[in-house]
Length: 239
Image (cartoon, rainbow, N blue to C red; front, top):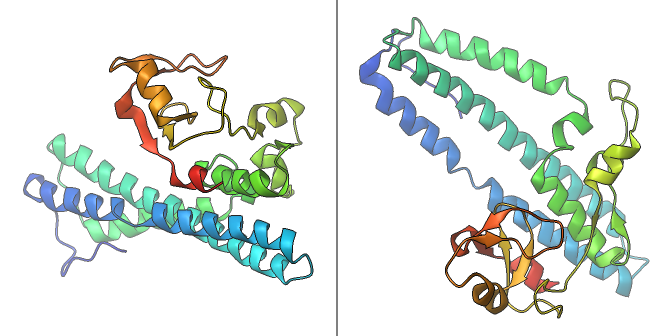
């Protein structure tokens, strides 16, 4: 998606709403749903590997990995475009007039894209929540008793990457747990917190919170959560 003006005319305060509308359109890109589909696919591939180990699953898993990277790239590049539009809005709010906006937009975008494209895979995807969910889904089926390594550790190191740090591995590691922290039983109708990403059985967390904000019941978590922070986790329910 690109900014397209019939003429490279100056823009000012009267154009704020148009730029904000453009930002809103970018936010509607369905990358979340597309990533969920890829994660569901790679989860099913892990199950298929168990029942038909001689299948062509590695090729399909490679395709899923490539698709996930492309979607995260799309999301990251869209955020770069949003940042430029936000800068335009901020400048206009300060009574500035944007001279030759299309030219300026394309120059800024070209510089940001060049910087992004020169990043290593670890730099692009190592901090991505979507990539974290992707690998967590693989481990949940293929290696349920093992700790998920740091995402950065799972992505092959390139020449521009820093040396692996053991502390980074610990920070990024997650052990799969399908028991509710309150009932200590398997999840029933699981909901996950937007804030700390911990999950709970719906009835158990609802009774625990009683309409108030409280500290997450997971041991060691100090995040305050309330019912409005929780979202139904259908992917976790499928596991």
